[in-house]
Image (cartoon, rainbow, N blue to C red):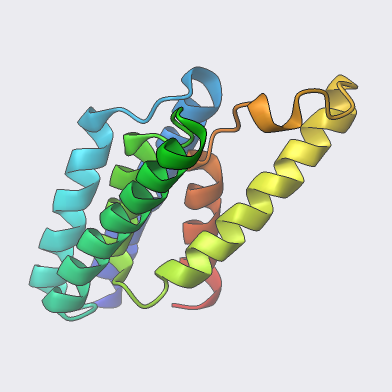
Length: 156
């Protein structure tokens, strides 16, 4: 598979991630109409191009979804309320289907750091000064999207 084809695939991947990031920022939701095709395209791209082995793609998809699902269930068990949405799980499944399971830990760590930085910047800009720190909602999709784009830009 030529590098131009990979460029086109990753251009589509990046565009999907950016659209999802802006939707999540504005509406705090990640629509299935974009996340499901993202998963399918990632699996198809790796089946067709062999960018990564298809099993790594499948494992990335499953582990991305199941990891966020486990965090969601644990948080609900501890606090009796939802802390992360299934859209984030589907987004990480899509990222895993494109990039495989190997980079998911790095992407998650970087996403958490970006979310914290974004939260603190937002607190300073809005001058809320950390009122109700544990009850505020922060969209995680933009951080996942930025981390993934940074990963493919600098490490792939």
